Length: 488
Image 1 (cartoon, rainbow, N blue to C red):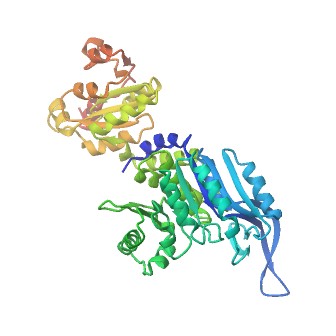
Image 2 (cartoon, rainbow, N blue to C red; image 1 turned 180 degrees about the horizontal axis):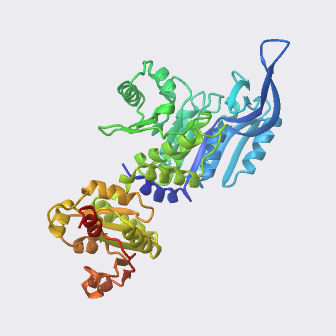
Image 3 (cartoon, helix red, strand yellow; image 1 turned 120 degrees about the horizontal axis):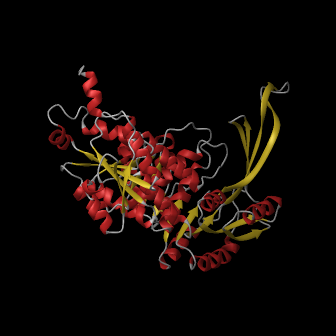
């Protein structure tokens, strides 16, 4: 599974991806106020209304999230010829990067959900919708618009909120049409009968929806996997991504081992719309050609962010990047790489146009002199890779009793420094092989060295790089510290 920094670079691929969303658009209203007393007419709270927000819900929330991720989005849905339908048109028109192909009907009331909140807590939800709308007369228009839009998209989302757009066999027909166009289909399911999603590439049920569709009790991850595999076999579904609310996600595909994505620890204010955010991130990844495990990891971070917002919020690329960086900061080992991974990382950075620096040393008992050298080095480059002598290498170079701290401890401390972007341990007496593999643009060494004595200087100069001798902070050295501790 890719590390957080690798996922950051993948997010750039969202720009220019094209996704078609077909499904039930709702109008979401949030009425926010304060409850300070109980009604004298009945034992119910009295909400003193202070604010009201209106936004796109259902498939519309998937569209909003895709637009926030920078994805070019086309939306096909049905609205009523009523004020709520007009409001949905206006909201879609105001959403940058979205093309709306809406079918309006006098026989279909636009679904509305109104949530009443006191502070951050929902106290009531009121729904306006038709229980059994007749949409057969509109089917040909829907399919015609869908086929036309599929010619200019990279993936298709069917966002089923059970309001009629994808009923009566339309979801199966749309899946077949998309496959004929060479497109993968991601389904956010609502119905218990998954035969209507037959041959879908990805379905994204939550735990409750999966339990009902498989008719199984789901108490453990093993039971979740068993239920997901049942749906795969019964309905020719390629991949099942199960969201487990506060417990993360499980991705079950055709590989031998499912992938688990633990929940990102955040304060939860509102889970409404979190599934839409997951669907948007997954479909953006599919449309951008990102490997599914990586797309799911990005979606998991996005879900962790959106549940910290009140209402059906959206998550932007910048927020996901910040969330991924937060994971890196929470785990210093995320900066510790094998030689192969470090080489891949250097290549990624080079393609991004970053200037790569390299420094090396034992760094036994980190002191201000070390920090000064690394800080100055980072100021002269975009990305700083640190080569760290292994325990055996330090012992050969420094003698008996060294290192004081083992390589794991030294690597962890160094990786926690903001100036260091990657740490690579090498077991040789010199870093010449590591330098030759990474091909840095700048090689850093302390100013106590002469230029002709710097290991790897000829290599770096040979491929057009530079060698920089960094001024040292006076009065700091590991040897002096050890002598003082020994009373010498």
